[in-house]
Length: 53
View: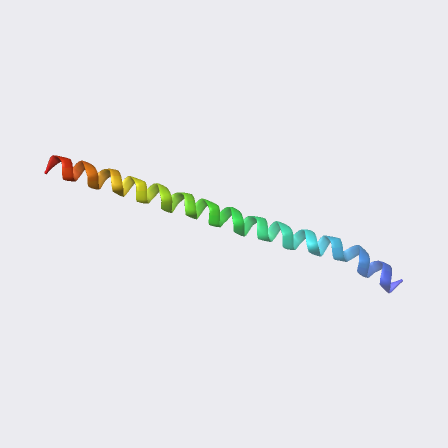
């Protein structure tokens, strides 16, 4: 009886870990995109400043 309960709770636990990892990946992807956007924005501002000068 204890064995069947263990096998039933294990998939739920794996699911929780998977969803947690997915959230972490989503956060990292969003942060990465934000950083890339910021770098490209700074580059464009820098180029415009150099052109004006």
